[in-house]
Structure formats: structure tokens, C-alpha cells
Length: 364
Image (cartoon, rainbow, N blue to C red; front, side):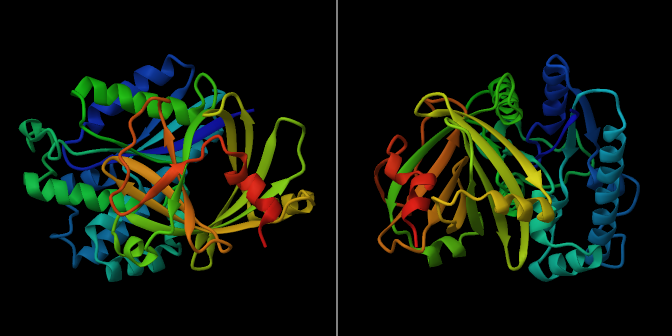
């Protein structure tokens, strides 16, 4: 069966995207992938003379950019579906939601309306998003505008834009942030490791740690730019022993995407996880196979990007004093930098009672 994955490589100015694409091509062609690159749309337009300052307004320019971005991606997906290769990786040099960082909220709504889409569908149209942090945050001595004539930001402006880009993608189920904690080569190796982990190379492992936390201040979370609330309805299906199968409706404001996830535990921390996107009709059909011994889990998930790590905070309607916080890791020994606004009670990764499958049996 043909396996086509579409990912976004994004990041602040002077983050290493150009070099990162070279590393991606070398690393994954060796793993048997055909790697396709969708060029950065903003650079194409601005270099060609179509820019926010040359168009009638920024909103007009952003409408052009959105149209070109989505059409390019459609063509690459169509081409990929007709290729002979069994494994194809489409890498978008920035995705459609990057545009949000360059617009006001009102402008963004006008662009969405013009494109006939919504933020949930636009964001979750990509299988994964990998954000390279700008050199202006943690590696200032290497920040330069010389290698991209479309780049004009100062160090301070680049750092602020980096934050806006992270905020734009926060809420995606597979957002990974690659910071400047090591040297540049280590940053590139980290990027490749994160993409390989997502693609399941050599096997689709998920390394996840789970913590019981005190009920957070949701008003504070919702006021943070790099935090996004997502509504989730999770239904467990009948499955074979040793395997867990669930379907999930994910989104908000009346707009949703749908997924099926199959999990098999290898160790307490490590699990094999295979996820696929569903159409709405496929999702509704799956609901007919719901496990009668478990109820649906409904929860509000707050996706929080904080200091280079991505946390998922689940608020359940049957608790008013506690919540669950999860984080996916690249390595079992990776250090976790807990957000200051959250109070951790204890780790519950291996506690059966705090798994969603167990909570489904007791929730009301």
C-alpha cells in the first residue's frame, strides 16, 4: 500500500530550514523514501515582486499567498499519488498556517473566508509540523539575513516572529519544536530523529510520559498565545487482545478532523502506535464497532508549547480538582521542563487507573 506523508518544516528566520531540507533528503532517501519538496511560497512571491507592500493591502497579498500555497500542495499530492514509489515524504517549506503569524486576527478570518476553509482543517491538513527555532533565540551570534533577500528582520523581530509561528501551529496533534540547546549539527540530528520517530522508522514507537496535575487555571491557559484549546471525543472500538483501537473526533467551533489510532505496548514508556486520518463517513462507520464495555471520553485538551517542549493538558468533565498532562519524547531519558503555571502531583505513566481506556469505563 502506498504511504504518503505530508509534513511542514517551519521556523523563525535563520533557523536552518534550507540545511534541514538537505538533511531530510539524504536521511530519508536512504530509508527508501521518495522525498518531494514544496518550495516556500512567500519567498517565491516576494522575490518575484508580489509582496505585502506592493499589493493593495496585506490582506490582498495573503489571499494570493494562500491560494498559491494550497494549489502547490494539491499538485504535489496529486503527483505523489501517481508515482511508483511505495513511501513518499512531501516536505512543505512552511505550511499554510505560517501565514497567520503575518496577519491580524481580522485579516486571518478574511483570508480563511476567501479560501473557503477554516483553521482546524487548514492546520490538521498536515500530518506533522516540525518547527526549527530561529538562531535569534539561543544562537544569536549566528543570526544573519545575508542568505535570504526576502528576510529583513532584526534579532528582536526574528525572536518575536518565531514565537508567533509556534503559536500559529499550536493545537496540531504532532507539533515538534527543535531548539538551539546544542550545536547546529546536533539540531539537525534532532530534527531527523523527530521526523523518523513520527514516520515510524524503523518502527512507529511512541515514548510518552503522563503526569497527574492540579486542576489548572484554564482562563490563564486560554490567554497564552502559544496555547490552543481542542475539543476531543474519543471512542474505543472492539479489538484483539494486546491491542487498543480508538477513533477520535478533534477540533472546535464546529470544525473537526477524525483519526483512528492502534496501539500496542512494548514497555511501560514505549508503545507501537499507528495512526491514520479518517473521513467523517469512515469515522461514523467506525462508531458502529464501539466497545460496549466502555463509554466515550469527552475532554478539552489544551496544547501548550513552552520552552521548546509540547505539552497536552486534558481536562475531564468528571474532575474539578485534577487533570492529566502528557508529553511525547524522542528519548526515554529526555529532560522535561515543566511549565511554571502547572503544579505536578506525580507521574502516572504506568498507573492503569489514569489511562483513557480505564477512565472510559468509569466516566459518566
